[in-house]
Image (cartoon, rainbow, N blue to C red; front, side, top):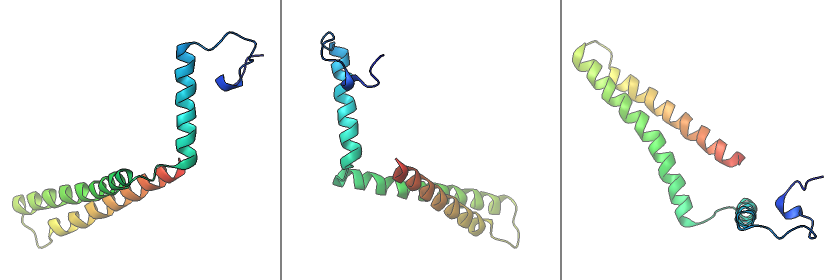
Amino acid sequence: MKPSHPSDRDPTQHPPTAFEQQVMAKARRKAQARREGDGSMWSGLGVFGLVGWSVILPTLVGIALGRWIDHRWPSPYSWTLMLLFVGLVLGCWSAWHWIQQEQGR
């Protein structure tokens, strides 16, 4: 029967190759990172920036599209305000969805 994990090797077998050692080292680092989490300041700033961009980008696209529609086809309704709201809602949903995925890891 083969071992299920490289660290479960039978010590009587041949010593691990360089590639196997690299794989085992990466597996240990990944397991340690999952246990300890990445609480660095830069990681927090990265998440903060990503959430900010995921909200602001759809909002700006909605504003630009709304201004273009208002300029091309004048109407009593402000497409700029309506699409600003739609972009903001989509951006907030996207940020919430991304954060939920990150917490599930």
